[in-house]
Length: 166
Length: 447
Image (cartoon, rainbow over all chains, first blue to last red; front, side, top):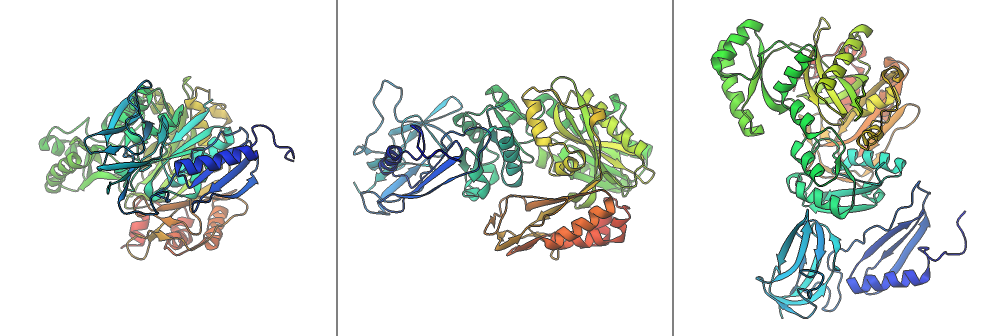
């Protein structure tokens, strides 16, 4: 039987859940699935208000599994309005590690609010020790950066929202 | 033992490997194409990465993306499954150069045995009977004719870089041999990038009998007995069984032992299958080696009680095989039917689509390995196999009865499957008598 008192690193710790909700809002994520020591929690966000979908005690597995990767999906609507046709979502063309800057000491290539053009480097995705500089796919204003520095990214994962009307 | 493995495959075999890993306490990383996003089996892994659009060439076959996923997923080894990159020596090398173990043979062993003609040479060196044929690749048409006259028509012109039933042409006389030789070279160049062809005597109506082998990294090699895969259509296996029926024990033993000799000679490690053809007089001849785990490995698992995927992982991690040849016993009889999303009444055309309802069989000695379920959409981009139905019973006739019962229970609605066709085959008197050869299905149910 599970303990009734949540431990400091328990997934059901309320502070942790609140932090997860904030993280979802900040990075425009729509779903997080976490598993730890035989318990799991799933957070889904349909609109601006995140909802805790549910949690259940899964059967115990021989070894503890650390947190799974969050699953950002396509545009779920922040400011500007949902599905603004002017907002282009730039997706990763490869699997690798996202870097927001050329090296740890330098400034990020772009920040929210910057104007970019298609001949500008917007980020680096590194795979197999090759650092691929990616140019902005379209010209416009960066309205959202959907990934964090050094985060693993997959093919098709949304990286930036660029407003082409600005 | 590994802490984390990436599975460079999809569907049924990905699920099979995931299951073994979960039991061994190994974390799993999966890769998937956009066509497989949301597949139920992906819920079972620790991390999953999208590696491309639906087409295999842009996703599952993209070496750099698979490796990139392995690196961000921080894995120690990759299991390639079967198909896709499983027999790609270059991928094997790339893994190792990135300090990731490839769960399978070394690139050298893979290259050596992947060349059919070289494999024949090693077989001869290991005192393993080969089909009478040319002594290496054919230089020209004149040589083809000379060898054909030595060994006697009909002959088979085969591509050295081919496999899986591809790149072969039969010739019954000089004229057809000349055409076959030219065409085979052209086709081989186009399909495999290697125009090399060799000649073999065409054995009519052979049985296809293959031996499961496994070798660790400490020099131990064993066989896990044989599987009869003669029930085929257009060189695609439909039904596999173990043991091979109506084959005397001494012959089976000799066949399996020669497989071990061959594998030892080639320095092959991890799991593999050595394929033979057996003629009407029960003479067996080596054909080729499949340097990977195969679809039908489950048949051997049932009769030997050995989990082959777990053994593959353990061997790759450097462990010794936990059994000797004497420990391996074959018990009872096992049969597998490959359930494909195809219409057997219309030339086995693929029938991708949504499975509306599904009821799966069970009971004593019944195993159904599938990644599908009610609501699953079978994508059109990959092979049509949706599941493997395997039964294990004390005797072959009981296994046939059990399989028929299980096929009756299996309900897959919304798409068509080959299940009804399997019933017809299993009910046929020739199958019941164990009198099958590789021409049985095509002769009996001509298109």
